Image 1 (tube, rainbow, N blue to C red):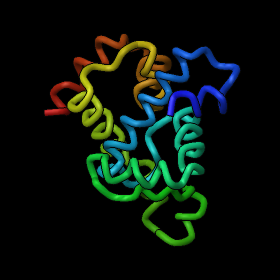
Image 2 (image 1 turned 90 degrees about the vertical axis):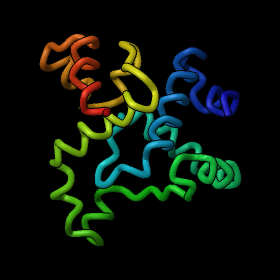
Image 3 (image 1 turned 180 degrees about the vertical axis):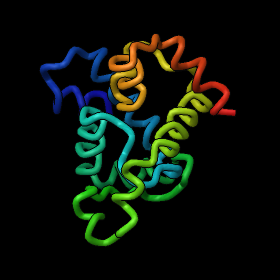
Image 4 (image 1 turned 60 degrees about the vertical axis):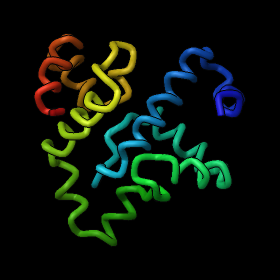
Length: 144
């Protein structure tokens, strides 16, 4: 998997490719709890898109994840036509907080270099001036 992504993303340092793969796998593992927009950055979504293209490998990965099922990917634009509740869920802050809490519960506190891949966490740190420590302290009770 790592070699595949290093070929797909040749301009990125290997360490960055590894982090993106790890964050994508974390998301896919907890995706069973995700409804509405995906709570990860474009960079992590890009990893997911590349992996979906490797259909055999992707279909082998999905049953190994927490939900033990194939994880479908549909854009919000498409879902807006088929699921009238999608747009209402987009703004559901509680869902996004719950996903971050699920992350902390399953993988431990956020690390500074990984926050940027989770838009709500990045917003709280970058735009609201929270430290990563404060973010984790706020999320830990919500993860219980």
